[in-house]
Length: 83
Figure: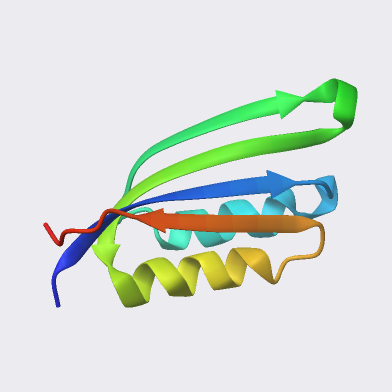
């Protein structure tokens, strides 16, 4: 299966979920090519952007696991072409 380039946007509204979130990201670290985190203290949430290169099944699995955490929302966008 071909790898795809994807961006996963994550909004963390529950600080108690951060440890689990980081454990999931660590489990997929071999596919992650970049990560940017922005704390939004005035709104009491964090924004995280993940760039990854992986098969579509891996991208979906990671995004699904993250989205199941309480107080965590995700949205994924993939490049149209395989790489």
